Length: 254
Image (tube, rainbow, N blue to C red):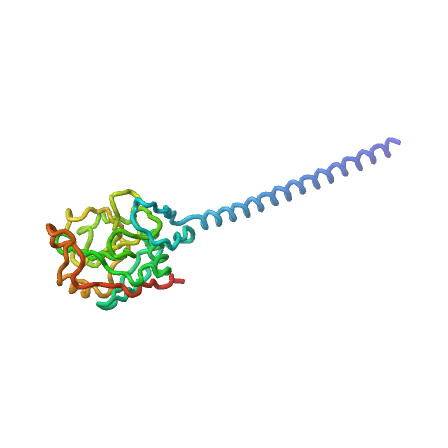
């Protein structure tokens, strides 16, 4: 009887040990499963964060106080390119003018200009303003050709030339705006001669640079202006009309 009792005791101890081992194995497997799944969630969250990262561009609907509008909708606000450059080809009555869009430095502005070009917003428009003293710019991009119009949205500035000397060298493409904080639209100006510091505040978005045809603009500027105000004879419509036939933007690099 004593022997049988001892054997029974040993069987119970063996069963207990096996049960504990199985339980420990299940705990280890369970912890491994949780870690693996948590790791997978972390990866998914990272991808989601990466997809959601990038430029945050806000395009506000324009109201009547901003002037006349040509409504072609709003630019996209997701998946906005923020690296590299794209080429703008502007065919005009005085010849072809090419410039780059700097997507890295001015992604929201480049995105807007690309969108408008895709809508043929700039086609068959005229450059309505030329300034030949103090600041040396040809201003274009108003669908109504008088400096009072733009798209049915506005947005803020970026890539201001605060640390550049001169702030607006010849060939600069920058965006026109009013005194309002959110007032950038479709109008842009082409600098055909260096603008010295103090002549124009560093408050205008620099979006690109002319790569071809700056000489055409310089030649047109040399013909002078028809002043809007007789007391300011160097600011008005260019005597040599500059009319945009088409304005296109190259596809994004793959």
